[in-house]
Image (cartoon, rainbow over all chains, first blue to last red; front, side, top):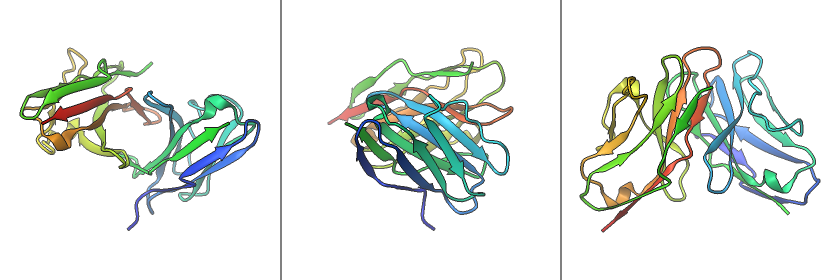
Length: 112
Length: 110
């Protein structure tokens, strides 16, 4: 089947606007992650969903960031009142909870 | 707190030369260690994990708990090995999120 997909692939937005990024994990994968990768930097953990457990939100940088997941399916990452420092590639990954994670192609967000 | 350190941002070698990409970690428990690779214009993908003790594309990595290291090695680099390599750690308790290093770009020249 298809791998992890993300949409949009690219998003340019004006400072102060809200954006919503979408992730479709591999069917049956119980674990879902969001990471952020700023230019020239490593992957920064944002949030982790595992089954029906409460998500680990410890990586969200501010209260402007939030994420939801519908059951073990689609997840959306919302950034409110975007700032220029939010510009990055946002990566989603899913897994069965153990073993390696499968990554999506990412959404490149540019805040002007 | 758990941390993964990759001291080299760029490693440049000639084809056929040995390669070692360094990774050190800090974690008080027994972690699970991974190497991920991202080739140009492709998505990030798992290369190998320490518990499998396997060799993928000629790469191996041994977990050294004494030195808290998980260096990636290949005896003879190939041009197609050029890519970004990320070391990652998963805790074995609580939320098992992956923590990544900052990555090393490997450039293999002909």
